Amino acid sequence: MTRPRSENYYEARGFSVYYLANAVFNIVSRPGVYIRGIEEILGDMRALTLMRPFHKYTNLHEFIREISTDIVTEEVEQEDGEYRFLREFFRTYNVVCPASALENEDAFWQFTSDSDRFHRAIDELTEEVFHVLFNDVGFLQNFNRLCAGYIEGSGFGEERKTQRGTLKRVPIPAWARRAIFYRDKGGCRSCKRSLAALINQLETERYDHIVPLARFGANDITNLQLLCEPCNLKKSATHLPVSMLYQRAIRP
Ligand SMILES: [Zn+2]
Image (cartoon, rainbow, N blue to C red):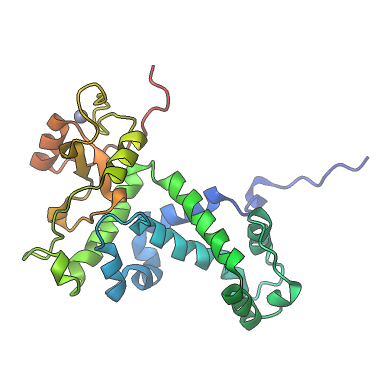
């Protein structure tokens, strides 16, 4: 009986949602290193997208989609030959790709422009990576700070802005409040106190902008967290950073 060839851990770099989530996490944590790509995704006219109030396809979806497409197709631009990562992506998401599409870059881009399945696969991947990152409020704070820099620097979108250039406050839609309430498990994100018994989950004052509107934060669900009233007051008084702790999945 032949044993399967064992691989070293460092070779285990095949395709996975966590690989992509980790890549997006690193890009957002160390934006200076990757600034050119980020400029293309968030800069200039694209900043108008960041200013849309409470879109269900969030700013983070847009960002993940662009980065994921770049990473998934990176081997094609490098004319790698094996396309190990790309083939695993195709296999995982049931994308049928003819061998001829991997012969050269032009053939590949022609394939992607004709293939609905390719684009739906990227959409599914984006949703999955979003799901991983949406729970990490420390990451979301970094992401929204990055977005805030582009909102502040953009000369567009005057009708959405105050005279100071910050975004106007808009009502938080019920779907967004519900999603945050469930993500934060009905508890204050900072002190973990349960708010479920105290409040009607649709009371808007418990929904805090992680990067405040006054600091060019966006009206995006990825920029919201549940905070109790004392923590909210403390945060506005001291610019308290968000809690880096994950919510416990099961309360003791
Ligand atoms: Zn609290």
